[in-house]
Image (cartoon, rainbow over all chains, first blue to last red; front, side, top):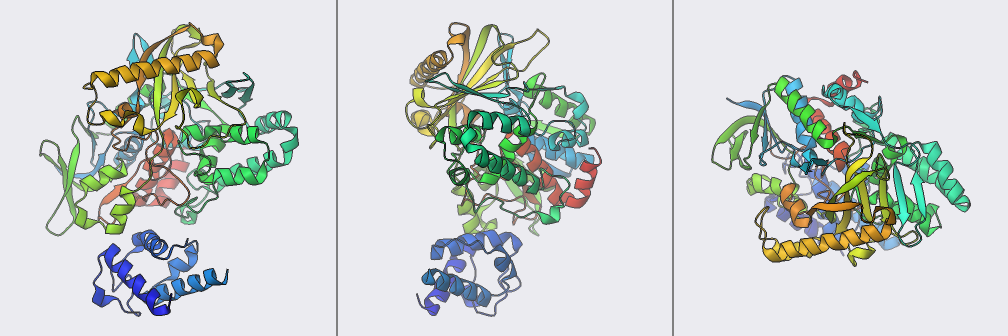
Length: 86
Length: 496
């Protein structure tokens, strides 16, 4: 999967599962202030990403530090590279 | 009249939540669809014998232990009379083929010694297992009131390891693994699925102290009834909540009841099954991903239950439960295969003033929902003849199973009532019909107390853990989220 494919899949999954506006899905969008997610959505964000990319997310600290969509792209990219190396 | 709080569902979580909120001075309404409060906890009577349906025994009730302290805070401890289960055998496992028995004693040291005597080769694994159980219990903030709530990590256990993985790592002997996972019958999730954390929080407390209540679950319900009355909580019985209603500005305005009446409120604690929560909340208020999560929560195994009257009071089952199974055959799947090969756990009726010995007992055998699925369109008291025949035959089979496994009980008891997965579904108002509601399993994210709907909070076994202890703690934890955790914790701890 290329980086762009990863970004597209993250965007489309979040738009569908959280009913977000596709136009707002930019890397610098703050997921709390711009996209309207709150701390209660964290678990569901993990579930969406796990479902879309078929990996398990256990990095709770890292997840809690995510602020922007760009952070999510970087996190998933990192996970994918880790998995490939294994 | 606008209530500060409406609590939906009067199981143990609802009773605890309503009491705490009222003790904080809130105007509280408690809504229950059954004609009486807490139908499962309340149990029933037949021919002068009282049978528990929800509560049989509990950990955490010893003086100063978590449930004891919580009951003191709730102002019901002095209304209850607890008794300890038999110190040398609160639970007995009996192999139905060899009649070999293992007696679980109360107290971690006593249990360790007995396990080591029975399985001397496994000494090291036993020590490690018991240490891990104790460690887990101490790390769970709601079991260890000395921990701060700030240290709570949500979703403890969702990433595993499972009980099965831990036992595989520590122990080689299959019989010992089976014994240590026997208590999975008390939460309805097989060892390869249940988070070790959850297992430890249930079994670990039984290793410390084991109590029942004189008068059984009914005495607990009556204590709460009195307390709710003292606190001026309004109780609405015999009516199901249908829908939440909202003000124009989007804030929660009330709960619409089956007859159309609206109970106006500012906040609500829903202690119902997560599937029922989805019926209550307009779907546009929840994220699709969250709705799907609640819809797809896996359910615990269901059960067949036989209630029997003893001709002479049973010493075997007084203050001591009996688990029937096969040593060396691990509990896989639960509820599958022929009834005669499934495990059964038996609990005597609670002691009363009529003398020693249990006057009756309940036997619980795990069963899949499928066994009664054909009649799922019927309701309590209106079942078709074929279902009644099925139930009668099933009770006869259970009776034979019990008599074969417990020769000393042969001819000494009569079946006085029975329950199937459908009974459980309708009696416990659980549309999914599991004996313990939603599963707690590795990889499954259960709902949390807070929701996206302002003013709506969840509590109940699905949120924390099953049983009187899990449900009571869930009510307490949810109130902590609403009222401020630290202050509530301080108030509870002041009662220890």
